[in-house]
Amino acid sequence: MEFHVIDKKTGKEPIYDGNHIFRESWCKGRLYERDIEGWYISEDGQLALVDDCNNMAYPPPNRYEIVFDEPTVCDIDDKFKQKAEVVISQLRADRDRLEKAIEDIRDEIEQMQVNTAGSGFYVSVNDVVKINSFTSGLKTALQIIDKHTEGA
Figure 1 (spheres, one colour):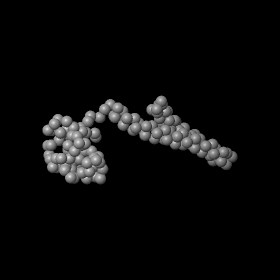
Figure 2 (cartoon, one colour):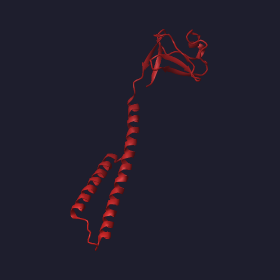
Figure 3 (cartoon, rainbow, N blue to C red):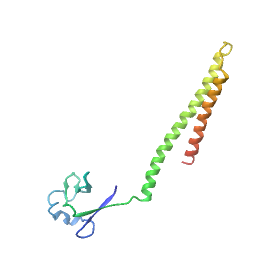
Figure 4 (cartoon, one colour):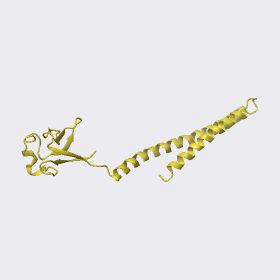
């Protein structure tokens, strides 16, 4: 989550350049002044200023106010779009697998009919009904996937 820091003495964001913040006792000599990375909040909620070498300087408690930025509608939309793209990609892959399964079932039925012709074995009507019911369910799944991924 994004945040910014307000200096309670001035009511403004702290200034890094011009050595303003580096003259304060809590920060003096602890950081590389030209390589400031930014502010960090530790797991226990303690604020620290960090340089590029991960050196940290901790201001006194209540010296600064941490203000969390509200996520914008664009941020939320982007996160939603990213998740939706992943789901749509998975649905399309599932659709391809279902379509392949239907083809395989049809091929298997044809092969069974060819192999059993004249041998006294046959595919029962009950088996055909079950297979048709199963492939019908797969086709319904395909239609649902198509409906939910249309235009995406």
